[in-house]
Image 1 (cartoon, helix red, strand yellow):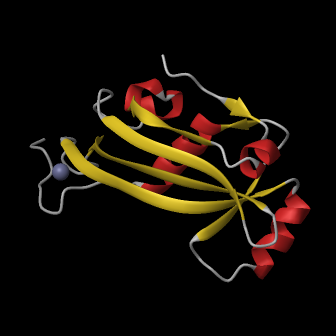
Image 2: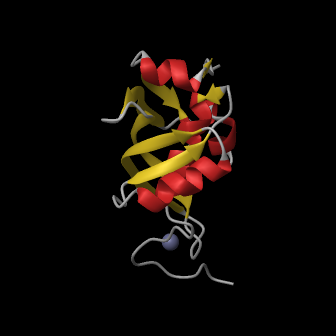
Length: 145
Ligand SMILES: [Zn+2]
């Protein structure tokens, strides 16, 4: 089983902590259903940091080569995850809205967090956001009826 660290977001960012490692897709509850090969390996690294004005951020990197079910022929199709994003941590929806309005950089996202941050959940979100909604081979045919 994967250890699922739950941290204080402010503390994690302010003290520049990191959580990294390699884990199988099947170790992540929300990913186990989305992918065909639960033994595929994801490499991840989440680090806390601050922007120039001392506001808490997470930098989340995750990569791996995963198998999904092709929505046309139903055979496995390989999808590559290679994500590297910065997430601002906001304490409330209102703060997130204000922050989003002032961020011009499309590579930066704002995440609303409570006092407890589930790091494995952040990785699950990043993986699910970076794979196609409707995975398909570039060339394949419908299975014979
Ligand atoms: Zn296919």
